Length: 97
Image (cartoon, rainbow, N blue to C red):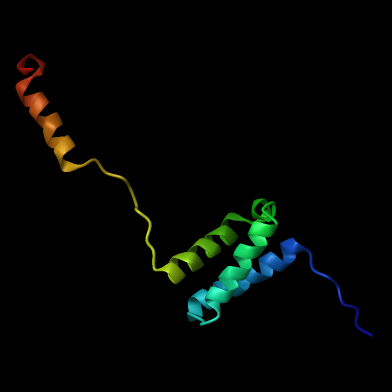
């Protein structure tokens, strides 16, 4: 006789993240549903996020990035006008103002 063991919320969330990892690679059509389930679990049990590893959180972010077709800025840069103003001040010196 086999005995059924109930999974904790943390174990269920980890299983969903592992499934998501596979679905990202396969571009599986069920990925939006799984992302929604992960979101619902995290929203209902926010303490579960602290139990996830950085790799697992990265998988969730990757899934969201693929699903939403979003990109993150790699680095913020100063606008060109600010650079040219700084160059002008160096050239003219502070006495010009």
